[in-house]
Image 1 (tube, rainbow, N blue to C red):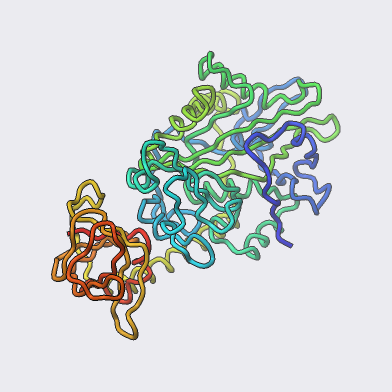
Image 2: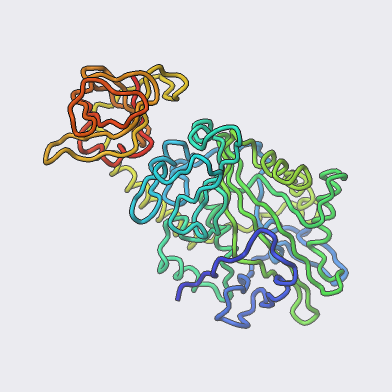
Length: 455
């Protein structure tokens, strides 16, 4: 049985729904439940490891994830080599997007884009994998992609994102007495990317107060469920990793409960929503402050680290267990090997050149956008179908072809065909097929919709 939840939870998870989660921490009350919490047995490494509450002392090791794990106050993190998700190596670029399959039938993203739309899913199942979002009303999707004014928002995140198999994940899952998928996923992320440097919370944040005041409210309310009528506290948070070129973030609903018989225990929701934000859309803080009109999104990571130090002292926060570290590293190693093999097999297959050139339509007097291609008979020749948007192409013209893998081919137009007739020049605004010396059949995977030809 696959041990992950059906992904149906939206950002605004209701408190009432959260109150239905009742399994305890460190106690296997129901081994069939996916909402159970991980067993916590670590002891504090400091005499100041607990915070006094009305019900007694709570150790940081049994606190919700952001309290029990390390955080970083670095403005931008250093991206580990080969780090990525969903089969991608980060950062994601326009060329990465344009070469992604749209569905199981491998229709390119560019063939699926509707220029009048501002939201496009480019995976077969948008509930599990990201949706491409462009919200630039004064430009087409193509222009928004070119300027990196897009966001991958959002999917429900789990082990599939790492390329981890179900069996491998279940081996780790079953090794815990009382496993919690959400905490496993979060620890998998810290294995891949390190300690997060962005934390913001939503329910109860007061934009009129300082970050310090809001953080104190967040900490006091979250860590003192015994003060509430139902002895429950829960917060919707964004926990993220801000790098120089992009940020990734998970929206995460975590809870802490208190029972006179069971003590404190966590029971977070296991649906983690993933978002990828290119730096052109701003930092994670910028992006979410803008998205919520300044009401939510303020990064409190530095203030939270200070509060944690005041409460717990100088402690060694919980780190991912070896079984999780090995799981992620094994998957990452397999992905890196596959990427290297793919690069090796295609890099030398064409007349690739390094050229410092703007391939946008506005920057070129002669410009053609390719919609599809096919192989000519049994020959090692590709026919590119497209429309001349600007200027005129002629046989014998030297051209540059920008492929969907980001490579550029320098070649010469050897033949042109329009309405099944050979022609010597293109007609503005009309479909035409062209053959370019320098392209080979090995480039066919990268000569699809989205390819640009310029003189």
